[in-house]
Length: 88
Ligand SMILES: [Zn+2]
Image 1 (cartoon, rainbow, N blue to C red):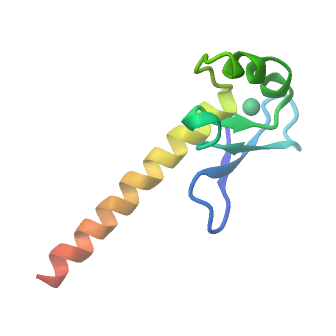
Image 2 (image 1 turned 90 degrees about the vertical axis):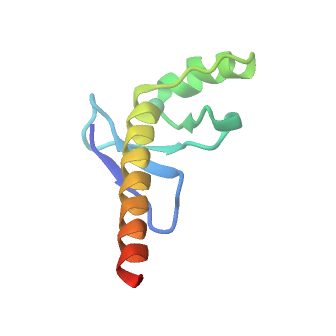
């Protein structure tokens, strides 16, 4: 599942649809108290109601974006650490 970062956005990503490769869904990982939201039909028609009742459920796009975001955070952290060590 292809995830695309959005320039200047830390927690929002575009995730390609499995069933319609020309379609991308916008996910926002910090929405809904950190559960995340997505503009795919599954999220809007089913998950939104469950999240409103307090369930912490995610669609596959949000899951993919979370994995992408964590990889990026770790990479940025490692680059920062490398810079700090170089300066010493
Ligand atoms: Zn979705």
